[in-house]
Each structure stands twice: as structure tokens, then as C-alpha cells.
Image 1 (cartoon, rainbow, N blue to C red):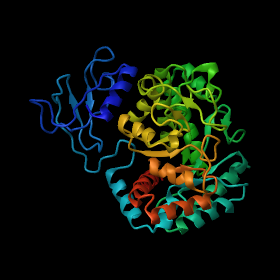
Image 2 (image 1 turned 60 degrees about the horizontal axis):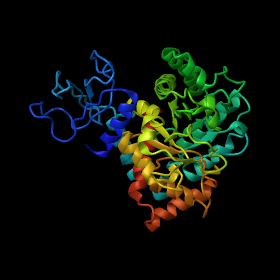
Image 3 (image 1 turned 90 degrees about the vertical axis):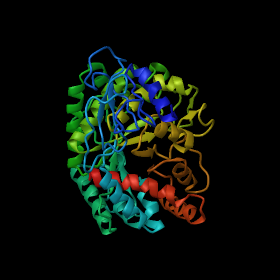
Image 4 (image 1 turned 30 degrees about the vertical axis):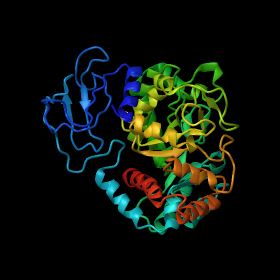
Length: 431
């Protein structure tokens, strides 16, 4: 079994679901049309009766072009279905990804470097973020509390950013992002209907109601021109020992958190806003705040898979488009290195959970991120596997550092194109 499927097996065991493995050649006697890829789904989702863990389910290729139902033996019970322009596992169609790849390949390095940056800005003047997008070809901006004065002002800011993106010659919208989790993390408090802390949704246990409420939030945000919400929180809290996440987490029970996260993410998408799962590989089980310093996560990969990774794995299987990498020192993976800058952490996300969408860093101006030469942390994040970099300390220095790194060969252009392709495909699809 390859590393990707080994990781899926760990998550599957934690969730109590069946795992069908079809890697490499199909099983003896199986139709050669069975795709050489596997997904984890419950037996109920696969349309089979029986207790959780029953070896029946669905097998689907990463491109989504064929779907075949299988029995425990792996033999197909229905013919494969061909889709002319299949969706990827994370949202955009294959054709949209190809369109993005072609656009990115033609970009000068100065334009390419900007596409992977999401910057903060000061004040409430719409001209400020628009100027950053125009000047550095930015992928987008994030609205913080200091950037919000009124609903009309937020709409004007979003419109100015999109006008700058269009003037930059791109055929896709810029990202306008915000942290709107509900509870104590709300940039639009008093301007939109109050949203309870995420823990309230987990405690209620009504997935349909959760999806509906987050669909209304997604529609409200989309109406303001906001394209991306850094929510839901997919962390599994450990309770009082967790000083940072707490009621931002749906539950201390991984299965409850997983169901609630999937419902909220689907709801935001229903409403027209891109959800972002955070903070991989799990901030709820550490005892320090990454805004201040680098929290140490002593748990091994198997323990993480049984707890922290469960909501992330469920959401990835449900089609999550974006995952935020937290700033956590996962000792077993990369001692002393924030997961946002760690190649091993990105491999865990990509290979073990099978995530193919956009990986965005948590804000790089936080205390957990080491400071060095201006823009150095941005180049490190991209080299490690990030596709989108949030809140570099100095956006001008970050842009210059990425350009210089590509020109010197320190950051391969191919890695930057891979990152930008995912970002542009996301915006073409979601925009």
C-alpha cells in the first residue's frame, strides 16, 4: 500500500469506515476499467447496508472521470461512467485547471510571484488594497477588523479590488478573504446576523441546520463581494488545556467535529463563498498560542490520524477546496519547523489525506514564524509546498524575494507555477 493509502487507512480506522484499496493493477478477475485510485467512504455512503467498517464502498479516480461501485472483493457491480469534463476532487473541472495552467505558464515572473500572495492592508480606504493588487499583481487581500467600517464600505473595497484585478489583465477575480467563524472571531460583528461559536453547532448535532446557517453566511459574504472565508475551524479541541481554539472547535469528539465541519463547509459553498479548513494538522490539541510563539505538537502521526486529522480527512473526502496550514511544531515530522514551512507537513496533507486543492499558510506575521531576511519566510513556505501565502510581514519585500528566488533558481519556477495554477483554477471556478 502506498503512503497516501496508508494515511487514508489510518483516518478510516479512526472514523470507523470501510476502506477499499484499488492501487496499481485491478484485482484478479476485476474489470480493467476500475480506476487505479481509492477514496474512503462509509458503507452507508456507498449505498451498502451494514455496520460501520463494512468492506463496501465507492472507488473514484482523482480526476473524477470514472466511478465504479465495488464489493468487498473489489469487483465492479456497475459500469464505469465517463464524464466529458470531470470535476477534480476539490472543485474545478479538469478543463478549468488546464485553462489556469496555460494562463500561468505565460506569466512573467513578476506577475506569477504576485498570484500566490494574499496581503493585509491598513485602514478603510478602498484605494489601499486596490493599489496593492495593481502594484504587485496580488492573488488577493484579507479584510481584518480595522478594514471594516460599514457594509457599503466593504462592498466598495471589494469592488475596488476586483477593478484593479481586471485592470491587471486577468480573466479571473481576485481573492477577497475574511475571518468570519462566528462566536469570538468575527470581523463583521454587528453588521451581519450574529453567528454562534462553532461549538454550538457541534453540540446541537443537526448537520442540516448547520449547513443551512452557513449557507446564509456564505450568501451574506458573497453579497459583500467577499470570495473566501477562513472557516470552518477543523481543529479538535482538548478542552481547558487548549488556550487558543476552545469553542472555535465544533467538538472534542473527532467524529462530531468531522460531521460539523463538512456541513459548514458545504454550506459556505452553497452560499457562494469558498471555505477554508483550518489549522492543519490540528491546533486544538496543543497548549500554546501560535500568535505568540511556536506550539509544540508531540503527538505522532498515528495519534494525529486518530484525532486531529479526522475532520480534515472527512472534509477532503467531501471535496474541500482549500486547507490552511497552521504554525505547529510537529516533532515527529520536522522538529522545530512550523508546519506552514515544513515539506513533511505538506506531504502529510497531500499524500496521506489525498488533498489536491489549494494549501494556504496561516498568517506569516504571527509570532510562531521565524523572522529572517525580508520575504524569506514566504519563499520557504512556497518551497515547502504552500500554494497561497497569507499576510507576509512586508508584501513588497515578499514579492521581490519570490521574484529573486525564481530568477536565481532557489525556488524552481515549476513549483511556483504549480502553486499559481491551483490558485487561478480556484478563482476561475469559484468566481
